[in-house]
Length: 198
Length: 380
Image (cartoon, rainbow over all chains, first blue to last red; front, side, top):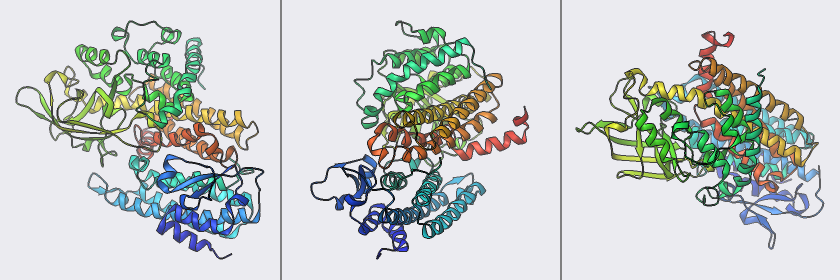
């Protein structure tokens, strides 16, 4: 396999979700691999003539959902690889958004003190990075579909932790934190969570 | 555990019936919150508007079974009804032209003339109120607000400043706007402002979810506020501004918790309706039911002691965490691409995140809970 997890994380961090997804999807043909009736792909990679569904937030990220008719494959080698690489992209995206959050919190004050100096905030930043380190190792070392799905479940939770750092601004559709929500939507089309506990 | 009496059980059942109407409108309002023509005459909108209005200011329209059993004095009653309506759709409920949060505040701080002006302006169900406190960059500290209510030399005030994340603000016709009359801790006041007016500008913000709430930013540039529009003039100085806001927030916080629980229940029920054996479904439902009990208990405690917000903060924290986890579970519960195939469920998974930012973020609630614990409220 030519695409590495490190490359995917770097692309997610430096170029964002759509670029990272494009890199992930070089490992297999979408129509042969997607586990569900729709699969997220970058707008520029939609196969000619394919039916697509759109989503207003995914549109801003340059991602659409391609229809994948017929019986869908489950638990294949390629699908697990896509799951691991997509996890790396999402971790990169999380880092990208955390960088912005730290900048945001440095410029916001409660009284005379920047929010980034508050213990609750410092603790939250530390928790996110400890989570990133843990999940990077988890995604790198495991190749079972259920564990890969678990990695994504935990990335969803970390993404929410980062989004909260922006306050209500992170809930604006035109804010970069939007990509965290869309990344969960994307993962939902590529990750089969069957067997993962709530 | 809170045992609901016959009246509260009736409120719950009648509200559950009404939720169907809200749910049927949810997706179209999410797609285009401006297109309200098909929704104005919803019987549930009329019922909510009447229920939010003190009886002496209500419209002369047909009553409903739910209105006849409402007592209006009880936070628990409010929460029991709201949680069922939230199972329908919270964003649609917030799109309803009804007194809402501003109404609670006006009822608390308004003079009889101000109440009449505010509540009768809601008649007909074509006008929205707004409650404008939050400012960009000051969302974590309302007492640091910069909006000013300067004397106009003629007994009135000149309103200048910006407000952000204000529900229904850009389409509001009458609302409450907070500003400073000076630099002291007691100088934050609220004024009843009617729109449109010279110097006002409003703009809807495009949000990730809860789009029916029409969250907006507002600008007031030398807007004239007559003397009789300042709220709380008949009250002691200490009770004219922030006191009323805090008291209102103690009630509203628990309503946000109820909204989170209602949305979580809607998500679990939707998933289990479409896939009875969805992995984790029973657990998700059990957690939502437990949160419902906590929110009921917190509401009952507010009824007993409205000034102490420890349990309502804990309930908001716990309910929101549960609702977000439910949304994250729902993302995979209907199989790959389930969110693309089920847009209503997908909408709810976006909506729940909004509750974090309403009536105090999680970190603000954490501070309240820790202070309450240290003050002995956890054992009270």
